[in-house]
Length: 149
Ligand code: DQA
Image (tube, rainbow, N blue to C red; front, side, top):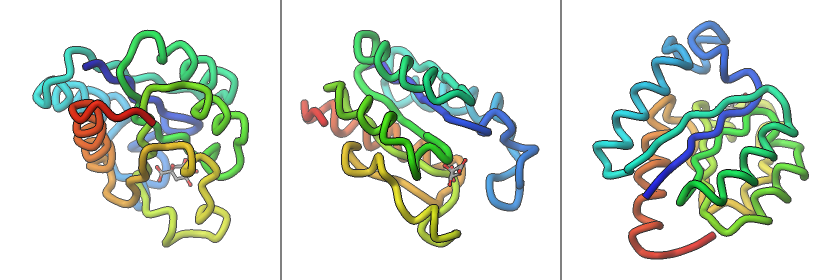
């Protein structure tokens, strides 16, 4: 059971970026915490990957299918409009859990739409960095049941 946590645009600025919305923890500290939690949950490997570039996110989703059992994905703003990220998720057979730090349904209207939600196993939104942890727990449940997305 191996997991990759993929983060999209602007998530490298966690801790600095709109802390009232996204929290005070840095990207690095969130990754360290999640890597430790993933190990506790029984994942044998946990990688954190972040890019501000749509193509890099797509390439990593593609390559992850050969290396990992599942993906926890915070696609950032790409969530709301990237049909290319959606198609990349639809193209692979490992499960993808969509996560968001903020509750996207409580915010501006453009954030209410997730074009990736229909091709993800499920969506977790609004629990700060705990959203990623809940994503790992959900992924573990799916993998243990042997379900694929
Ligand atoms: C986000 C929500 C998105 O609307 C936003 O563009 C982000 C972060 C979240 O984690 O709450 O970059 O995905």
